[in-house]
Amino acid sequence: MKIPRLTAAGIVFVLGFLPVRPAPGAETNAPARLTEGWKPVPFTFEIQHPYDLKAADRYEFDAKNHTHHFWVYFTDKPHAPPPNKTTARTEMRLETFRTGERMFDGDVNISPGTFACIAQVFDAGHGPVTMIIAHTNGTVTVGHDVIKTNAIGNWWNLKMTVDTKDGGKIRIYVDNVLAGTYNSRGPREYYFKCGVYSRKDSDRSDVRYRNISLWVKPEP
Image (cartoon, rainbow, N blue to C red; front, side):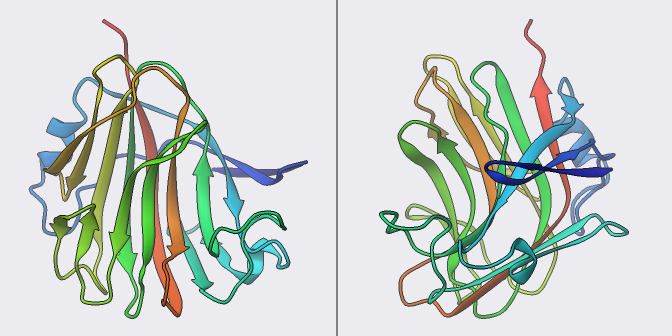
């Protein structure tokens, strides 16, 4: 269920957790194995969008199908007025956490022509740690690593985990298969983001997410 409320930061929503559904093409029992030992939890988020527009000008939510639609143009304004100089974005910014291990889980569908960061593990104090980039040729990358090909126009599942402990890891899963492992920055505040954060020389970037869930691994 989605419950909107207004705050000084903009529109904030609360989402309850959704049942895990296998991604198209994935093994039926793969999500259950991957999330074994994790607990789904409700979470809050806000929608970041060009500051001179309404959220509804760049974001839609289809409650019936649990689908979030994000789009942005490179020529749009950033999400905050000057002195902010970042490129334009329409993103879901999930709540901040500082302890334990968490997992973002959602199905994603990238529209043709999209050149944008479509998901991030973010260090609240020092910026993005891991950025997942969609390219117009259908590849999806983290740094120099290609984690997905033929990604345009079809639904696939993305999971991101981050462990906040010293020596903790960030793991990226595509259709419930490990696609990359990266270092976290240890104890600090993190949050997940998804949507479209436009890249230089992009035009319109457009992505849909559905069945977004947040999972927590209970402490031993």
